[in-house]
Image (cartoon, rainbow, N blue to C red):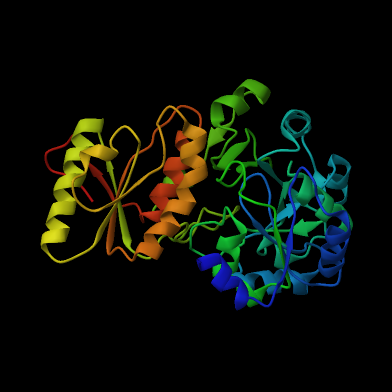
Length: 365
């Protein structure tokens, strides 16, 4: 009943459609809202975005206010054609053009030196601009009808798990937006990979579906920024997700790494101690281990052999922890082949870097 009850108290216009059958008349209306300076939440293949006119400083200020987002955390500009890049990027290296030809449209964001037409309010005061060309058909049509340039961070309250359904958007933002496009659950469930092309070699600032190995195969050397796993609050963010606590449930989350057996046994012991102390404990695990937990509220992200399923379920389960009202959460680590860096990046941020190694006798938190 959460979604139905939430919608009763949501004054934003809700437009329902599917990617296979987008409602173009509704999308023209939503595009006009964006062109006039309004805010529209919409689905992409990664997560739901909170859109505003990227070339309108006031619209970008409205995005920051709606999310409660720090204004030095830059927004991603979404485009609907590669040709649109030249108007906002001052310099596009050949390697970036090659990568765009292979990965756009898709879950990839690239950072370039910006042209003056992009306001500082959109870029968090940086002289660079983050650009993405989403593959979701609803998103692509909306961007075109809005004028071609839509700034869109994830459509959630800053710091909370990103939204993978329209219900999550309604739960977080409600009347802070003018319109919500409900296009059903998203496909990937984790934000786009971000690669910085203002440096040589290019640097990954946020891991995602397109991983380092894939990027290296396409364009050669691509480094991973050490700030991705940094605990420092002094990092000036070139991209979303590099600074501040992100993706976090309300309860304290701790990751327990190690062999499957050791991690499960350590989590079961920790949960037993929490329950004995009168606290409600949650467990995030996989299908392979869910029967190993006799106590606590257990959520499985899916089978470890289906890493796309794990990624798609992560934010929804972090939100389910809030709904269940658990006091503490323990999660297994998920170091899967393609999406492992992205999944662990999000989990580590959500946990505030609290990690226990179950293979060590004296764990470090």
